[in-house]
Amino acid sequence: MMNRRQFVSAATAAGVCLPRALAATNVKCDLLIKGGRVVDPSRKLDVMRDLAIADGRIVSIAANMSATAAETIDASGKLVVPGLIDIHTHATRTKDGPSLCLADGVIGLIDAGSQGADHIDDAIAVAKSAPQLCRVLINIGRAGIIPEGDTMDINRADVAAAREAIGRNRDMIAGVKARLSRDVAGPNDFEVLKRAQEVASSFHLPVMIHMGQTISPLPKLLALLKSGDVVTHMFAPPPNSIIDDDGHILPEVMAARRRGVKFDLGNGRTGHLRWDMADRVLKAGFLPDTFSTDWTPEARTSQVINFPNVMSKFLMLGMPLDQVIACATVNPSRIFPVFHNRGTLKVGAPADVAVLELREGSFEFEDNFKNNRTGRQRLFPSATVLGGKRASLAH
Ligand SMILES: [Zn+2]
Image (cartoon, rainbow, N blue to C red; front, side, top):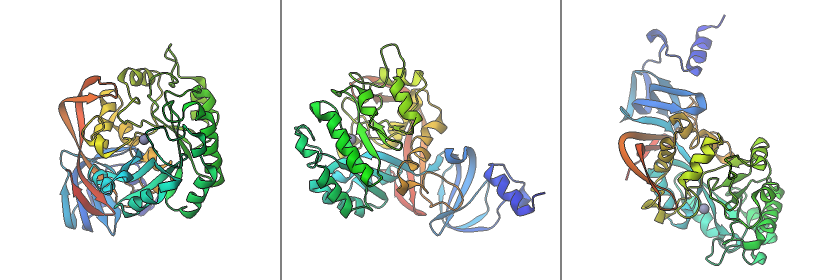
């Protein structure tokens, strides 16, 4: 037999609606998010609930909560989801990048290789001043992203320089980025990835590769990836995409997923996302592990716009809402240890919450190849709560 407290916590964990007598009453809190549809894939929850927050943490989730709150957010007609985590951005390129992302509901950010060893301090300074959790991946090319190609000159893939930079910034560098397409690494792609892995494994860090349009075949590159590594731009069209002409996901891609390699969207604006590729990959049943924007300040006005807009594209492509939310919350929270206690709305978790609006209508979405498609739903940022405080209004 369970005692009353065990029953209440078991029932709450199962998302069961409690009888009124057992429901939380007279909760005192700093912030109450009232009347929203709570979608939290970490707990398989999709129900109307109020959310009470005190001392920066979620203290109660219940229907029709009677609470005394210093501040209330009216979330009626809106979605209340764990704060979004975007693992591929270039948010540190500009000082206000992280704040702009915060207004979109993003409470966790990875800058994916904007800078290499030579200028990593610049990226780290912005990451440290970010309002939300922000970490960087160091570009294995020591000069970072450069027009002539980060590692077209193989000497720029400098293992010693990258190791020295990580050694000085263990708390801020969350992994190593290797951009491998032909205009970035040219014929050096395999050697560049080997060096990135050499650096990462000495610190037990993941590598993120930018795939697509490589000179080396994808299976040769995937063979170098270990559990916890991330492949971004997973919908990149040929040459060297993840799917063959007959609509089969490459066996080496399936094997990589089985051993723990993660596959990420990386929306971006050039060469990464094409609708027909996304159709074929999703039809083959190979869903993304994570969504990410490849955010830059310029992308705010074209294609990317903001993280909720990027998520909306996959509603249009037929993914169910809870899976779309999972790819932006609980799934990315598991990739980098810094986010391990985020991506969830469970009681006791840090109160990082995104309030989104799911509008019905007619919405245009553009891939990276100037193809437009019309969707019937779009997610819009409405409010962000960070560390229990209302961070911003949508811009
Ligand atoms: Zn990028």
